[in-house]
Image 1 (cartoon, rainbow, N blue to C red):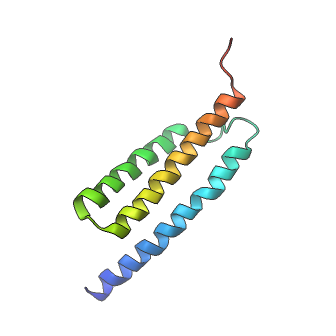
Image 2: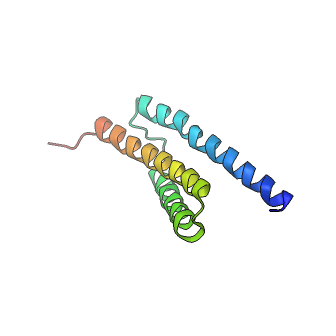
Image 3: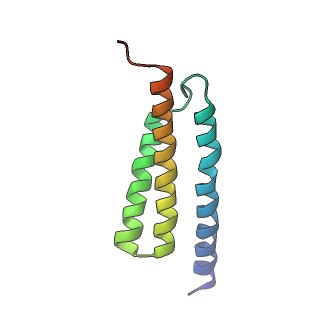
Length: 98
């Protein structure tokens, strides 16, 4: 393995963990939102969910690399968690008319 490949792999692993942990502040902000998380863009988070799902599939099916797969799985969980909590907060803030 070349030095460059080793450095890039280490950086990917490091930043992968940082990004996964980085979902927590957004989740907390959405959960604490008092306006139904109206300022959170569900279409954007939906695209990130789709993109992270494709990355997970690529990591697992194409590369078969366990570390890449785990980082991608963390991103999938984080993206879907933010999107799901946003939807739940909106349902709570904007209940369906009866």
